[in-house]
Length: 453
Image 1 (cartoon, rainbow, N blue to C red):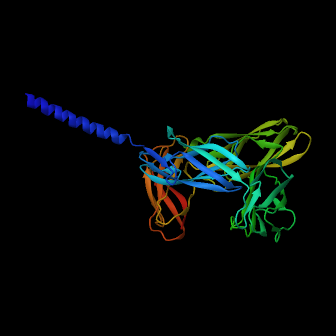
Image 2 (tube, rainbow, N blue to C red):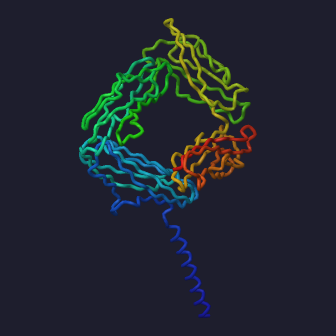
């Protein structure tokens, strides 16, 4: 009897030991993010004696033990210091996967000491976070060689009236020890962004600056714009040119509520109607909608609004039964408005028709991938209006990537796309082909581009 009790106790002890070992294994971090090259144990990013306009980057090693994909995000604790931060690289980690992300910090544009914090979070794990303290200082110390920076780095014009002229002024500053020779100034659209004077051949001595004067001429079509000025020079920090980005939005006296696309119904015989509210800005005359053109291939106009001039008119559309499944290009409409004061204006409006099932992103751009380094991107297939479908298979047209269907049938499916090991250096293009069980969308094609270095 005593031997039996002793054996039972021993079995219980062994069982307890097994349970303890399993629990200990479960306590390992399910998401691990580290900066392996920090030479000190404190969670601090030290950026002392940094030059004006410089930046520093830190490599993050990421390991996930979760059975689902995880995303990484980063935010600064204090934006008043004007420290600029970006999180690049592998910010989406596959199930049971590894990755490398890069945290890039650009110093504030003022001299002196600065402090801040950066917090790395995972939206799928609300209780998880990693925080580092940022300590640093900016000094007025020239770079060795020809170094050119722009002040400001970009120009945000804001809202401008259609047809208006807005000045754009940027200073090109030489923060190096060698003179800068400005060789060429390239503008993305010379009709919209005009640079005054010819500055090609100009020389900026160390410590000096050259003022670049321009003017933005707003077009007639409302909406956001983004123009680029590229300054080519001998500056070693911008061998491919210094890009100056000019952004803003063209507004008109009459604008719509923000309806940017029409989503097809999951059931083609139940195409819903869409209403666009056009309203007059403050100080503009009441109006009526007298004509709409450019919609005939996809839309029917059900109602143009009231015949009495008003500050707001509601135009009602519906998709035609014979409309294409999706439009590759936006649908550009011309809306004719008759004002109460007798004037007639033609006002443009842009709409997109999205397919019943659409891929996100519509194109896969892996960017530059180091040879032999694994990299993956997930394609999400999204269905409209509660429609359920199943991705049957996914394949690569040219064999440069591996594909895997992830998830059960439903309103969303995921396709995991991995760069195939052993690809030679240079650019590669491919197409991921997804077969579905949906009779209206049996096949979905997603272009792929990779640059192997």
